[in-house]
Length: 345
Ligand SMILES: Cc1ncc(COP(=O)(O)O)c(C=O)c1O
Image (cartoon, rainbow, N blue to C red; front, side):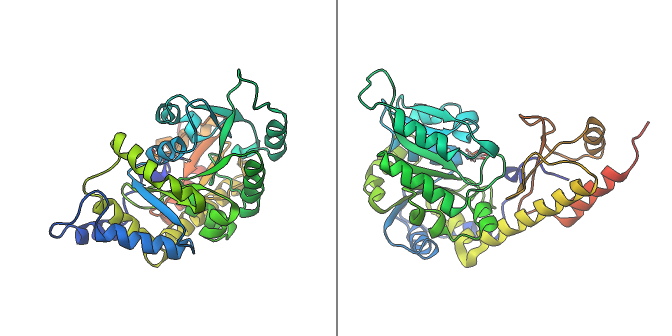
C-alpha cells in the first residue's frame, strides 16, 4: 500500500528498455542525437504543431525554473497560486534562476486561481509605480496541488486575460497527463491552443525515470536559444541527452503516457470510493491521481499499522494518497480491509 507519491513508483519497464536500446555505440552529445530528433517529431504529432522548441530536463523543478526564467526578468514577478509547487516546494528555484524575480501569490479554492481576483489585480496594478514589482508571467498548475484540474476552457480564459495584461503564460504540467485524462482535452487543446506559451511537460511522475520537458510554443520558441544557454549555465545540458530523450520517446510512443495517467486516475477513483464507502469525507473532488481524505486518527493508525505509506498530515488537515501507473487493485483492496478491521488493543 504505497500511496506516498507517484515519484515513489518505479520507472515503467518500457522506459528502461528504451534506455537500453539507446545505449548502443557512440552518439552525438548535448541533444544533437537521433533519439532527441525523434522526440521532436513525436512532440509535433502529440501536440499537433510544428511550431515549437523544447528542452529535456531531469526534474520538474529544473523545468519550471528554467522555463520561467526565460520570461520573468529579475525586476518582475510570476503570478501563481499561493500553494503552487514553485512557491511551496522548490526552495526558491524560480527566484534563483530568474536572478531576483519574485512570486506574486494569489488565493483560490482547491489550488485553482480565482479568475476574478486575477483579473481585478491586473486591472488595478499600476505599471508605472516603480515601488511595486510588475508581473511578467502567469503560472498555472494542471493537475493542481490539490489534485483538481483546470479545463482547457478555464486555462484559455486565464491566458486570454494574462495576454491582455502583457503576461506570458506558463503551465506547470508535472501531472499534465492526469489533467488530460480527467478533462478529456487533447494535449494541444490544454496547451498552445489555450494560449499557453511554455509548458513543463512532466513525464517522471507519469512513469519515466527522470524526464521533464520544457516546450515553447509559437512565438515563445524565440526563447529557445536563451533556454539552452540558461540550461547550460545551470548544469542542465546533459552530455548524454539521448538517455533522457529515450525516456520521453518510450513514454510518448503509442500514447503510453496517457494510458498510464488514465490508470493512475482510475486507481484514485477506486480509492476515493473505498473512503466514501466508509463515510470518510474527501477534502477535494478527485480529478486526477491524488486523493485527500479527512481521516480520523484511528483510521490513520490502522493504515500505518498495516504498513500503508501516505502523507498523514497534509497542510489543511487531510491525508494525501497518490496513485501511480504502478498502483494495483490489490493495494486498494488492502486499504478497504484495513479500514474495515477493528482497532487492535
Ligand atoms: C506540481 C509539481 N510541479 C513540479 C514538481 C517538481 O518536480 P521534481 O520533484 O521532479 O523537481 C512537482 C513535484 O512533486 C509537482 O508536484
